[in-house]
Length: 165
Image 1: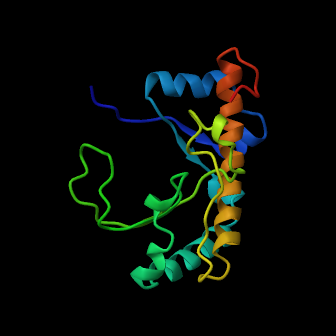
Image 2: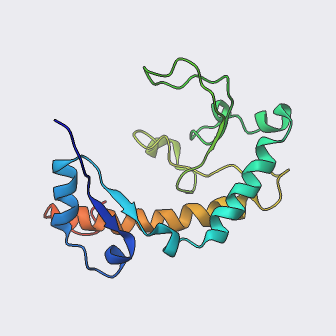
Image 3: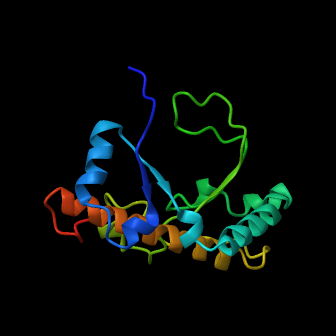
């Protein structure tokens, strides 16, 4: 089967409540995904620009400085992923990029509550790159809000409470 088109949803329409939950579910059931347009109108370009600037400064740092935030030393899978790190992906033979992973910033869970929630915890930000924490937090927060709106639609369309996810 050749697909000649795919669903495009405009984020502003989602934010205004103009996209029915069934439309998102139909896109997932039919195609497995959808393209989300209009994000450049709701995520200020300055957020992306500041994230890009601090990321460039971080990745230009000496390896020893970056390794101070090595993801393998993080209890919650947060931090620097070097070029030499091989991911757990069957098709990844050689990694040709480096990364800095963050996630939802949450307090450390008590040990007895961690089972199944090992990735829940605080982010780690390099102190040698001024503004990195603020830039990444602002960008992550903007995208997190978008994901919450989409998850509310998915929950609603699935017959669940909007707050299910």
